[in-house]
Length: 345
Image (cartoon, rainbow, N blue to C red; front, side, top):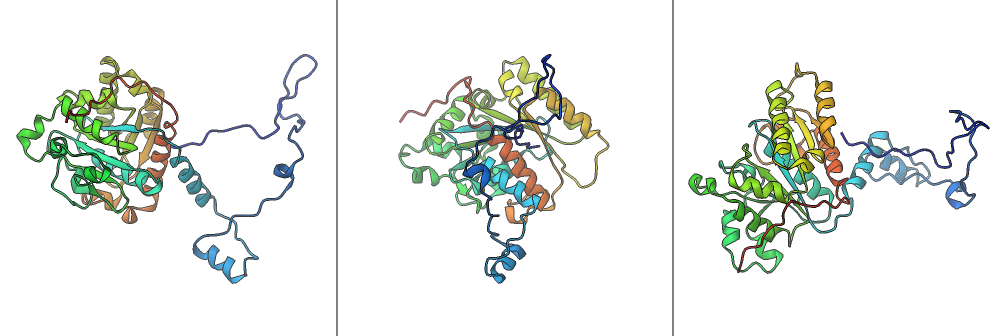
């Protein structure tokens, strides 16, 4: 769950006794300067919508109802999501177990980032087993990853855009190969070639991976990723699969991705789980950067096109918290294991 960094109150100084002992709670000297920042009362923000906006307008601007804590939290999340980003940032969404909401997490996270940020966000289907990512947005083209690679005239953004489908959120999706035989052969080199093209035109690249870790493209995905999102269900088998994924990554030289990982515990069905989610949280928090719970959502459970307007309020907030946690890593440059290789002309 996203938590903003805490800081001590402005001007706080621990009080020391003659022996050097600090007395908690003792009166503190306030070192803040007496300037306009500390002395001038700041007006409340002008309401922008809802009944607060109506009251503000009806009173001729003399009454500004207080902004509720929930709205302040949302504004805080939006600010965090809009963390400046230099270059491109690559996220791999993984799960060893199917049916836990991996693709749903990839597309809804991407939609949230694309809707709230001003830069370009794309999700790539790297699932070798007839991935369904492209079915979660309005299909605007039949083009696939291989069609993009075969296009020798990709000099402008519009050239690449011809190969993608775009959701109302502005998220773009690049579909996987639909021929089962060809899809299985999607290779490490081909994935790096796709990434080499996309990094020239997109700021955030989300890869929806298959459920295996040993297929060819997975090597390129992991070596070029900045971070991973590991999706699990709040069930014993889902948690064990997620833990096994972390163990595999550690054993194969991807420890950097384990420590920076975000674990998403997604509920694929309504109702509470018998698993102790607090214990689950403690375990993954000890190994990874963060953990985010996402509850069951009727719209997302349909498995069709994702429309953020139809996603439940609590689920939208959970994905905003996930997006803010992802964005918190944007300023941290990380040495990737490898860089993509653009295809030769």
